[in-house]
Image 1 (cartoon, rainbow, N blue to C red):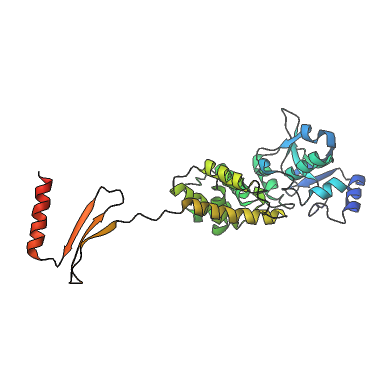
Image 2: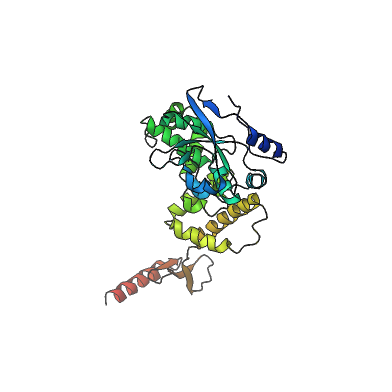
Length: 325
């Protein structure tokens, strides 16, 4: 059995890539020998046409950009791929469907590099595919939403109602900690309209999701259209050269500016106050006669204090007479 590598090429990877090309090993096993795979190499010119992503692979393909693969792309471009992916052949199309290595596939397409794969030879169940997918997070771990997508698929296969079950019970069924599950499910609910304002949005730090969920809830409570709001925000920052030089800097600055943007958008205008006008000046400092008018001018209050009972009765009589005339 061939021992899998622990990552893609680093600075000292040239010799490892050469060893792979010269290796005579053609097979290996998975899941304690339950499955056998043979090694195949997809030529660079055929990577895009002869491979695709398996439907159970939770990696978000729409999020793949050169920024998203910046940790592996330069090495693959220079030295090629030194860790095989795992795939099954689609019976109807003949394409190799990748259980992992979608980032390597993307990098190969954009760097004109070959893609080495372990092609599973046996009849493979969905449960076995999911198990291999779960074990494949050696190169880059899933984002919280991607991991949640994987867990939701497992839950559905177990006929578990994710929405109805208590988080404690669901976590136990999925063999994951309660808080870990809560964070991933919360991240999964953050709208893509919000996520996609970030560069490499599946690679944002996991501690961002709490802030993004808060932003989403604030906009929802204010009945703001999420898509239109994010479109306005994206336009605002599109020409901003101060976001930073690195992807991490840009992500951090985008979050900061997003929170500021939403805060300004939802900032409540000061509630208009009633205006006061004195009707008369008295020697007694505690005496007053004033009229209060509402901001829209549709309401008025007349207040009298220490002006004498006779004058108050007379004022009341005059108002009543005026209104009934």
